[in-house]
Length: 100
Image 1 (cartoon, rainbow, N blue to C red):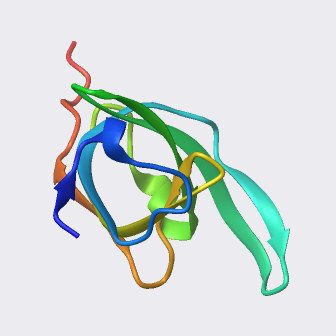
Image 2 (spheres, helix red, strand yellow):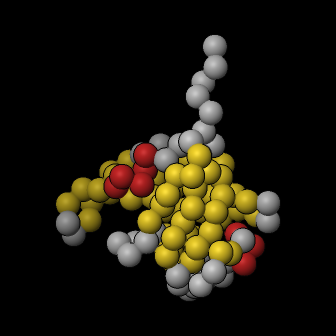
Image 3 (tube, rainbow, N blue to C red):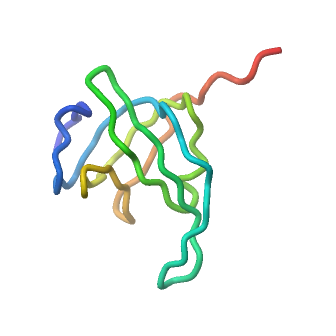
């Protein structure tokens, strides 16, 4: 599937490729899974067409508010975007560093 805009992402959609900005992010927590504890956070991915909740797992939780990211091969479930083992999050441009 080609590059989508956030407004075009529908529930149960697979092979989602989209770019956007991390508009907000929750604090990182740990969730117990059948494989042990895993870092987890929720973020909001935004582009000029809208916003969608993005679930972040393990090293994905390292993204920061303001980062421009590309989601490759994600999937939508329960109106939230997920990136599983077959997908990835690429940081295109990191958020500007804090200025003094």
